Image 1 (cartoon, rainbow, N blue to C red):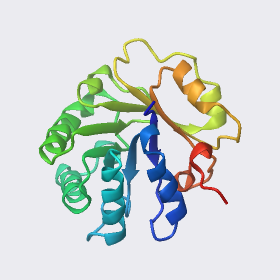
Image 2: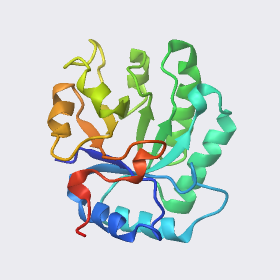
Image 3: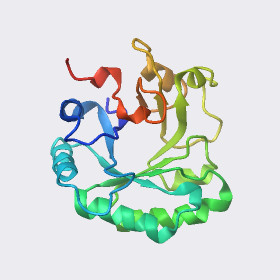
Image 4: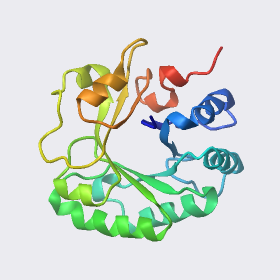
Length: 215
């Protein structure tokens, strides 16, 4: 089942074996978040362009990372990043990070979603990190309703709040070896997930245990 959404924020030149492992796992992947420089960067990076081409050739969704600052980042700046991801790396989707969750910001994100579709994004993932207002399910293919550490995740209720009404994703870090995070995600209503061992300020510089390359 293609249920893994992998946000791996390392440069291909620095972690080639890890990226090879991700590409090799293509049939298991819902998508990969491409994040050259907390977004697309100021100019195209040939290493990321080559990697994106490999992922697309393996039939993996390439989702361009774009920070939205919980609705505070200007519309034009977000759209610029979306366009760069598509033009420079052939991204066929968008991963919007730090997305607001309340109804007051919905109009802003509705305009961003329209711009993303216009920029060639066939898949839209919104990372709220919590359950948003139900309106957001109208915009996204996937809603990230949890991003946090393993101990917090284990303590969550076993089912999502009523009315979630969309494909959900949970992103969990600090996950110990042997923990069945995929099964726990399913019991919490998430069809898509990622669970990595990393902790601290940069947990997404580690891979899920099941994707780690041989040493």
